[in-house]
Length: 178
Image (cartoon, rainbow, N blue to C red; front, side, top):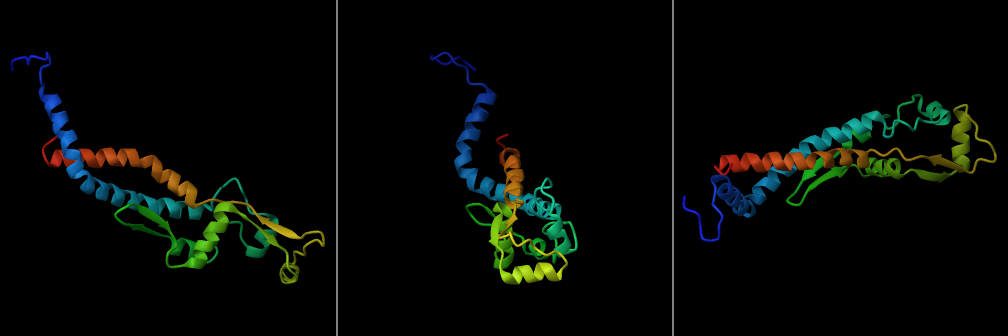
């Protein structure tokens, strides 16, 4: 190939790079769709893993909570939180949550940020009936944060660049531009 007047030789790899760059806007919707579905495939298991682990493993349940639950495993009482977790994909992104179980979503929200609960007479009776009477000076119970959704999302976010690169390369290979 003769050198152009402006002094740069067009190499095969450069031409291929330009073709790939020009093809991306056309291929972007397909790449996006494939990336979103791959993200969804890893997001569900990531969320389930966090629920099974009980959120933040450094925050053990208090002896009071263990005596009430009968177990030291956070979040896994009835299995409702785990069973209700869902992943959905639309044209814009991936959503993790509890769309069909608002109560499980409310519990997940409490676990995410923690909560302060005012002690009521009914709560005092319940704790006393379970053999764990509250002190008269106890006016608030503290449920510390045990995030599950945030850490699951963080795990997924780490994988997005690699997934995007793999899907882009796969599609460009398929159309002969890589």
